Image 1 (cartoon, rainbow, N blue to C red):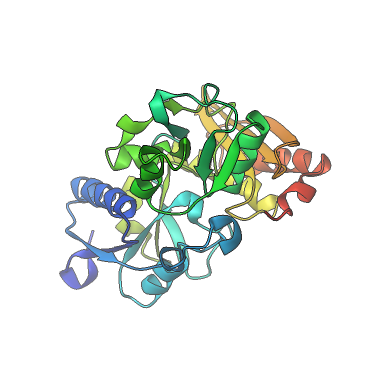
Image 2: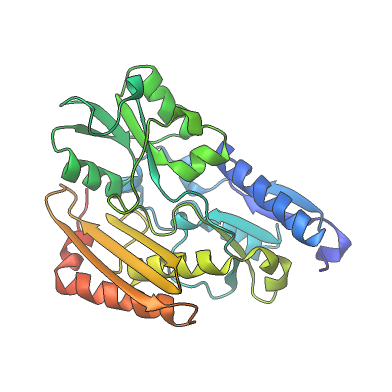
Amino acid sequence: MSTRAGNALRIGTRGSTLALAQTGMFADDLADATGVTTEIVTITTDGDRSNEPLSRAGGTGLFTGALRDALEADECDVIVHSLKDLPTAPHERLVVAAIPAREDPRDALVARDGLTLDALPAGARVGTGSPRRMAQLRARRPDLEVVDIRGNVDTRIGKVTSGELDAVILAAAGLRRIGRADVVTEFLDADAWPTAPGQGALAVEVRRGDEDLVRALDHAETRAAVEAEREVLALLEAGCSAPVGARAVVDAGLLLLSASVYSLDGTTVLTSSHAAVWPDADAPRDIAGAVARELLAAGAADLTGERP
């Protein structure tokens, strides 16, 4: 594999601790797999500049637009996203050439005194910036106070250690990637508590025609699972911050997909599950179509169109 003009492959990423950690892991894995020399290029996105809650900031593209602009402007050769932040619509000039093996897709509770979600006392204050997590919290524990927060991982954890909040919910993958899994007091079961489509996975984008730069790290089972999850999101015409949870896995020659749509107040939950034979190139699209049709028939469009 050749790099740009024989120089290091320039990998664009956000500058957060988590983004740099996961991009560094990807760069190391790519170097091990291909022998390429890499250079990390830090790019500031709109999401990094804004302190507005994600539920009002318009999540689709908030963390990805500046990265894509830099790639198109040849300021880097490859960009690394958290897949759950990536808009579902295809890009005209860019392509996701690699989706590496997925990290833990679960949500994780970080609570005072080692408490679990069910053990939190009535009235406990739980922080999250995700409308989906807010809806799930209200559905499972309507007696809790849900607090809309922003900030990096350390800032959110600090709100618990300082006593400002009783707990926060974060992505387990992010905590693992920055070496902070020790603060988790409960990993929330992915079947009962489905997470954002694509959570725990990375998306590596390149300009069309440059797919061979990173294709060595594409993981077929992860790609099938996250493509099914994200196709549901696209068919529901719901954005990255919509109250939609999805879980897909490849098991014993089957691709299994379950998705749930929540009302923001947590009082309504719609769920659909289907399976398809895998490997089959059409399986992610077919299974997502079946799930989305069932959810839409049950009234999902009324829920995803809600605003906080």
